[in-house]
Structure formats: C-alpha cells, structure tokens
Length: 447
Ligand code: 5AD
Ligand code: SF4
Image (cartoon, rainbow, N blue to C red; front, side, top):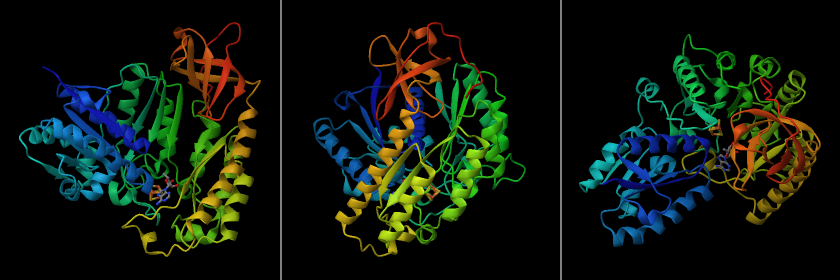
C-alpha cells in the first residue's frame, strides 16, 4: 500500500528548489503527495530563518501538527531547511512530536532518516559537508511538463552581510561544475522547458573559487546556445560582483530577460558599510546607469531593509532618494530583523518599533507610486509573453513578459510553451490582463 506525504515550504526560491528535490526523493521511495496533512503518513516542513516573521511562522505551523501526532503515533513529522540547520537537536528536545530534523546539506539523507523514524530512531542531521562532496550532490530534478524551471548553479554564500543568517545556515559558497549545469539545461530543453532561471545566493561570483571554471557571463553565453531554451533569467545578483562582462550580456544575448533583481538594501554609504555590502551608493548608481546604457529596456527590482541598527532619518531618506533615482519596477522591503549569530546582532537598536514601521510605510507609499507608473506604461503595448499554463479562470492562459510580470489572457492551451505577442489592456497590482491579436505568430529569440 502506498504511503502519503505532505510537504510545506517556507521562504526563498532556494527552498522551493530544495523542496523539489525532497519531492523527488520521496516519490522514488514510494511516497505520494497529498494536499491535506490529515491524510499524510509523513509531514515535512522546509523552513526559513532569514527573518523573524518567517521563523515564527514555522513554529506556528508545527504546532498545528501536534494533535495529529497524538491521534496517530505512527505519523512521522520532520523539519528541514534553515531553522532545522540552526536549531538541530534543540528542535527534537523542544518539540517531542517531531521525529526528524535535516539540515541544508543533508537533504539526500532524508529517505534513510524516514526509515529510521519508522523504527522510532529520532535524529537530527545537520553537519556541513566538504566542497567536493557537495559539488556531486547538486540535485538533478525531474521536470514533468513545466515550461519554466530553476537550475541551481551555486549554493551557500561567502559574503557575510552583517544582518544575514544565510552564510551561517547554508555554509560556504560552492559553484556547480558548468558541464553539469549545461547537461541539466539541455535535458530540460529536451523535455519541453522553455525558460530557465539560474539560481544562487550570489550568481555573479559564479566560478570565482574554482580555478579554470567559466565566469558567470561566460556561463550565460553557453546557456544561451542551448537549442529550445527561449528565455533565461538569473537570481540573485550582488551589486559588488556585477561585472562589465555581465552588464554587456544584457545587450548581447537576446534570450536574456531584460529584468534584473539587484538588491541594494539601502541608500546610505554609512549604513551600507555597516551592512558589509562592499559597495557605495555611487558605485551602485553607476552600475545601474551602465545597465541602462547597455539595455535601455531593462527594468530593475530590489530588496531594501528598513531600520537597520542606528539608521538615522537622514540615512533613511537617502534610501528614498536612491529609489527615486533608479525607479525600480518593484521593491521587496523588509523591516530589519535581528538574527542571533550575525555580526549586526551586536549592534544596538534604538529606533522604536512604531518609528521603524512608519519609515517602512513611507517607503511602501513611494514605491507603489513608482511601480504603478512603470507597469501602467505597458498598457496598450504588445509584448512577447512566454505562455506557462492555464489560469484558474476557465478558458484563460497565463504567462510572463520579459519583465517577469504575469499576464492573463483568453486563449486555447495549444499556445502553452510558446512566446506569443499579447496586448496588455490593464495593469493591476500583481498582474496584468491582456488579449491576443487576431492572428498569433510565435515570437522567437525575443527575450
Ligand atoms: N532583516 C531584514 N531583512 C533581511 N534580509 C536578509 N536578512 C535580513 C534581516 N536580518 C532581506 C535582504 C535580502 C532578502 C532576501 O532578505 O533584503 O536581500
Ligand atoms: Fe545574505 Fe548577503 Fe549572502 Fe545575500 S549576499 S545571502 S544578503 S550574506
């Protein structure tokens, strides 16, 4: 009789990709997914600890499963990801209904740990692995009909931004061999994938620690050659490592989407230095200028932290003026959240929470006005859209423009997987509405 698993994923794209690997491993072991934890024999949470809110969510959700375990003692409950990495054994001690804890380098051990838990062997595996072992453990994932896929090209991070827990919970930066990446991309293209997003904490430093390896710009050129791949994205980019070669790629590679997520974090030099970001406001603005010269159509998005310890009103306003200068299409903004074990955890936070929130709200208001202005420009334009699948609304499809905006439009499913021209007729907060022109010719190599 087959067994059922329920998996919940929190946090970033890295976790989404890790969860895909978890699904593959469990399915290979005879488990099938279910949507309702009530029906599961195995419940897993893939967790995130990048900010306090994400971490609290994990504990909240775990609590929900306690009564299930009381009713069905054979149910296995496991925790993976960044909270698991950080807490390890402590999670088993604090939460007696949890059976297994697997850290960020131990996903491949999950089947063996589940088998152990069935024998009542409660375990936490959180050891970091050495570079060579990790290079061979980059997951190859099954692609089952998807049009867009993530491809992990590196793991970990060496940057140690002072506020960030990631290097502590995901370990040192390693780059996956380019030959393996290209093999996976080719295999995906053969199975119908049309868009790949190359994924890493800081893709711009791809290959930097590997003698003889391609640079990130060179890797992009190679991926661009893969027949069948029509669009390429990558995330995340660290501004300090954004090379001239990479900037040129936006003008040179037609399949490369003209969108770049380039987290700035804040607009004040003094705060950037305390954050250990490795660039100044001017250097950031200079790179933005050069990107716009290389590719006038490019749209940028960013991450910004509000209320870093010691941030003054004036420093905060420098973030606002930077936003006005760059005109990001979207900004993901976060209230600073103290993370135990990071360098910034030792800095004193003197800003009262309501002042921090007030700054956050001002930033949001400004960004909403900028975003609305930018997305409204699309209305009336006919844009190439890579069609990804059927919308929830019957008879409708959805896809994305080069700027990663979702567009819904009426069409039949034969267009899935193609880049088609769609006329944008309305722009909402999170998506756009479009319509097909009278006759649809596929658009190729248009990004
Ligand atoms: N507090 C607030 N935001 C944070 N981020 C990372 N660490 C913290 C923290 N301690 C944000 C950064 C990063 C994004 C993924 O999360 O903006 O780019
Ligand atoms: Fe965290 Fe900085 Fe690494 Fe990004 S580059 S994961 S913000 S330490």
